[in-house]
Amino acid sequence: MNTGILKFVLDGQIVEIDFNKVGFLPSTTVLNYLRSLHGHKGTKEGCAEGDCGACTVVLGELVDEKIRYRSVDSCLLFLPAIHGKQLITVENLAIRNGRETLLHPVQQALVEQYGSQCGFCTPGIAMSLFALFKSDIEISRHNVIHALAGNLCRCTGYDSIYRAALQAYGNRQPDQFEEKEPETTKLLQQIHAEGISLEIKTIDQIYLLPSTLTEAIEIRASNPQARIINGATDTAIRQNKTHEFLLALLDISGVDELKVIRRENNGFYIGAGLSIESFKAFSEKEMPFLLPMFDVFASWQIRNVASIGGNLATASPIGDFIPLFIALNARLELINHQGKRWVGMENFITGYRQNCLEKNELLLGIHIPYAGQGVVFKTEKVSTRRDLDISTLSIAMRLELDTHNKVQDIILAYGGMADRPKRARHVEKFMMGKTWSKGNIQEARALIENDFTPISDARSGSEYRMAAAKNLLLKMLW
Ligand SMILES: Cc1cc2nc3c(=O)[nH]c(=O)nc-3n(C[C@H](O)[C@H](O)[C@H](O)COP(=O)(O)OP(=O)(O)OC[C@H]3O[C@@H](n4cnc5c(N)ncnc54)[C@H](O)[C@@H]3O)c2cc1C
Ligand code: FES
Ligand code: FES
Image 1 (cartoon, helix red, strand yellow):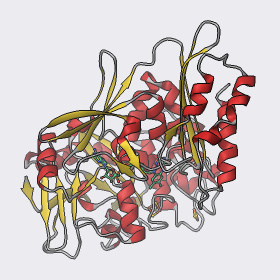
Image 2 (cartoon, protein in one colour):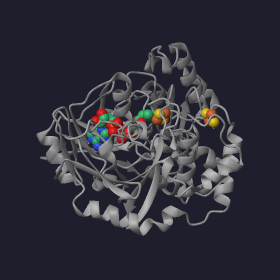
Image 3 (cartoon, helix red, strand yellow):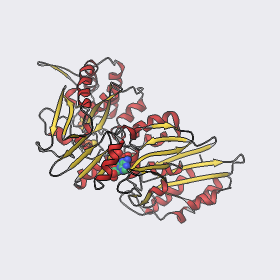
Image 4 (tube, protein in one colour):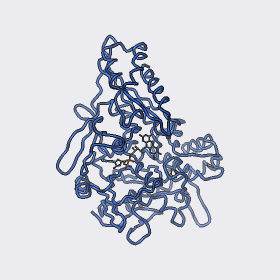
């Protein structure tokens, strides 16, 4: 492992940070770093919790010798996560030639379509539009709105921003980033050639960034006290909002073996480090029944870094993928330096935000068995806002009917109804062998009271949760 020096590309050159010589900690966020720099204060802090997008930057990463761009919230990104990557901020979009400034097509379109008033959100919006401009996403109203769901604008109105996206996309031509790609690629390759794993030790904090699974497992065994992070979207919030200070971090986001996704004989295997956005792209082809859930999962910036493993390991009672994977009969593969073991999704969660991982274990991957012909799978999420909101409660159902429309097998998993996502076993038992009809489901609804005693909290009252849970069950009919 390389010791100490973080390296990334900014403003067309390699920047080096030696944490023992500067006033930053490894867990300093990219946003706070940028705000300390002359010439990069366009990146704004609005909420520091991933909700407003004012801090959006774009990361350029080498993938198969090409640079792939993705938007991220810099307020939730620890500095070492940009090791070996290109950091692009709003100041980098325009080309400056002496006194002349040539705006990037997305900036020009925002100007011409009146996409900015007070301007606070504008740098973040420009960066999200830039990421869209650099992607191969098909342009449509749905896709533009979806790409901007993580950007809040209080004054302009989204229609002018939407028109700007259409204009910029409409006359898409190679931009300066494409022209400079060979130079940037060389710089990134130079950093990668030195080895991409990193061990940063300062008086206050240790940050370990392995690049292989073997390294990650060894580090896990010898540093059981280190907090594992991947996308850090859950962990960074706690640092920002509750001032939680982490003495040691094990960042597994650089381990490619954790990002695998493959078809096996009896199901799909998904690496725990796969980003939610990559899982979404895979599901579009292989598991389209999951798409409604991706549509309401966080924002593009969050999904680009947040991992499946992070979502499951938080063991949150309102984590969206846990009920989903319970219903899918998923099993999780755990690994340590002595070997591997498998655990069922429901058994992995042992209590409120508790999982069964040993101190020296990592979550390696998830196995999802093929559903088989005729199996119906449905999900619903109830939240205060449609976009960028966590669940108040959610349901996921796997249903197998026989040729007489009778229930042969059923799994009904709820999130937000208990200290952890759980199956509604009384309801399931009642429905087995019965006709899948409105009358029977109406009758089964009362049994949810035997399965759950929901609590009241800031998101919702217990009465509301119970009523909504019963109604969600009815919604599974259609
Ligand atoms: C603005 C915003 C919106 C959000 N919206 C949603 C939403 O709609 N639905 C939802 O479910 N969640 C949501 N979240 C919560 C969170 O972002 C996700 O759960 C995300 O998937 C966490 O993944 P991560 O990689 O970023 O986690 P990290 O913060 O990196 O890790 C989270 C936890 O998992 C552990 N961990 C991570 N990977 C592993 C591994 N391989 N092995 C062992 N332990 C591991 C870490 O130790 C840590 O305790 C949202 C968060 C934000 C900030
Ligand atoms: S500051 Fe609001 S998302 Fe980062
Ligand atoms: S222009 Fe004012 S917040 Fe968007």
